[in-house]
Image (cartoon, rainbow, N blue to C red; front, side):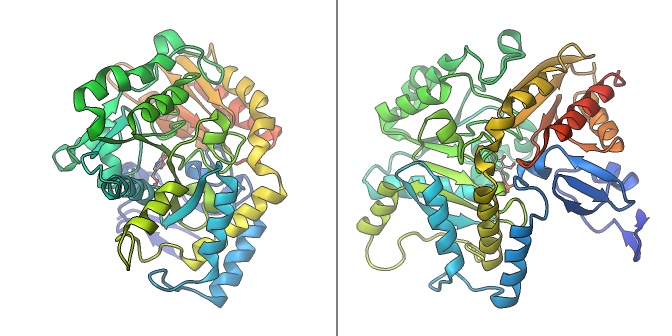
Length: 445
Ligand SMILES: Cc1ncc(COP(=O)(O)O)c(C=O)c1O
């Protein structure tokens, strides 16, 4: 039995099967967080740790933001739960209205879920049902992308492209899925500052390979992360997303952006679609909507899609889909608090103010031992290390552990070390973040 002793009582670590974690390694050497405030965690043994990843790309307003805390506290004592199945309460209506006001024009209806994974599966189901309603029920094929991460549910995993996540489930995944190539190419596009100048033509594969193979009349949607985080921080080449949009338009294919990481200010705009100037037909969100404080996700759809369901279905329920906790009062309260914080502190554009400083910090690691790439866009970035022969991922994992010991939290993803600090971060924090990673990389053989 692995135990750690906290102030109040010994803690048995055994029963909890931790997600996406080496349970055996963690329980041998646990890293326990006791509290968090702003851009810092405090560990159970009292150490301050700078959160260089907004925890998991979530805490855009910083930890325990007073606006979020206050709203949750008040809500918990007022209305703990009311279902949204045939009942209503103010919270989700207000949140939906505020998200619609932030979203690109025309994307103005919001379906709530509890997570990014549920948001993706919901988006895929809306796409299929929408085509069916319009008499185009043959459109059932989804196009995802290699190295994409769209969560862990069966639909999202099917359009994802991360081998480690898929390999045990290949035979269970949706059959009607194909994948675009990913956009990473370290030979020709390493050390790009922001969007790489070349590579937009990778989008053409949709029209030159996948559409001829499957026929456009059978393709329901293309789903991509505008910037992928969990796949290792992959920044699209300049013009790539625009080309995807144009091809989708030419063939009546819906374009879904998975904005679970990019939503709510990560790229210096409310959503990535505004940063890139490319408008999808639907997009998902989660994480930053509550600044991580309470689970909440959702799908924003354009008006025509919502109207199709309202106008083309018989009386009664228009979409047989939803989660018990869709539109939960506490999640709605947290979202309203986070949206207030974003608004009052100008956080949805703050990444743009810090982008140049952040970029210099990321690229200052060029030339350090084993660094084969540095990449960034607004307030998300990564350095990539040469794999240690025969030990994939080991260098990044070792660097992560050493950074933690030195008071900085970053995330190892394969050979990459990812950075995604809260939007409230100061330049001095960025100095600490990149300075620590640089010092550590000098010690990782
Ligand atoms: C783009 C994207 N989609 C979906 C998800 C899944 O979100 P969740 O873990 O809330 O289910 C993630 C999580 O990182 C993500 O990055």
